[in-house]
Amino acid sequence: MSAGVPGLYPCRVCGDNATGFHYGVLCCEGCKGFFFRTIRGNKQYRQCKNPSKCLILQSNRNRCRFCRMQRCLDVGMSYEAVKMGRWTKADHRGLKPTLVTKALHHDDLILTVYSAFAKACSNHNNQLNNEPSLEIGGSFFIRNGILFATAFAKQLKDFTSLGRDVQHKQIKTAIIEMSVLFEEVRLKTAGSEDCTIYSRKTENSVITVIRNKGKKLTQKLMSLNLTQAELSLLLAVILFCSDRHCSDTADCKKLEWIEESLLSALKYQLVFNHTKHLGFLPQIIEFICCLRGLTIQFLDDILRFNGTYRI
Ligand SMILES: [Zn+2]
Ligand SMILES: [Zn+2]
Image (cartoon, rainbow, N blue to C red; front, side, top):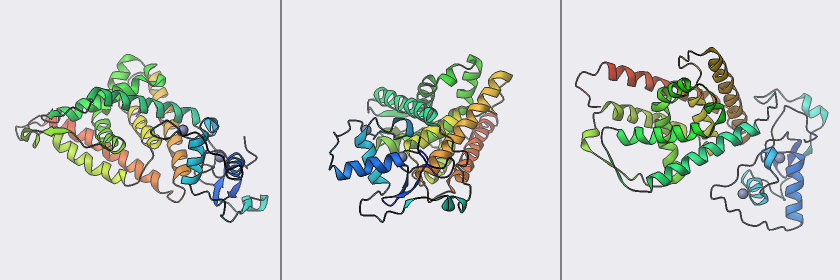
């Protein structure tokens, strides 16, 4: 652990407690030393083989030095930057409490959710194998959502330890929301062209109407440029949502507790990754509520089905 005062600001590189501005960036003693040793020793780390950069957290920051250095540079560390040095006690007194007042370290949770997400995405890519699929009435969109949601859920012990009925209910009721969000995440992370062939029959289907509304919502969310770790936490919040009428009291309490921990970890990542944009969390909460509205609308439309739509 660092010598920083707990609970003020997280290190921009690894999330440990920052001890001040070093090399132009708010960071901890560990990352300050690492950056200094790398530059002074002119060290060249072996290129990392992970195509999507390693997620650097306090607990694993020594594992991949290449990605840690990359992260130092990405957040703007520079040897030439004016070195402001460590905070004094007087500096701390002037700082207002922030979202990270409790200095929560959610490394394990973030790593678990993020690796579940990465595995589910790669399973999904293997299954698709880039073959074009015929989209009829939104079937492909929903199929993708189900494949992803189940693969993601299976990787999460907290989810698989819930009662089977509760697991089914959670996935079933979250499927529209997860499909909508996953579709956008998939396009963004794969950076690939959508190879779905749309049939004309899809235009008025209930699912297509919902999907288009969802697309507008997610595009707004995507403009926040959330990291993959943040998006994976958001998908987990949707999956573990505790007010989907769970009837088992013990499981209900567990869902509530996990949902709270996930939101807390997400909040922590947002402060850590987007220091200048503390308004992200309310926008994300609003997004979650709007997505929920889509599930309600979808169920209403299905029940009121009067021939206007094709399913
Ligand atoms: Zn650090
Ligand atoms: Zn790496």
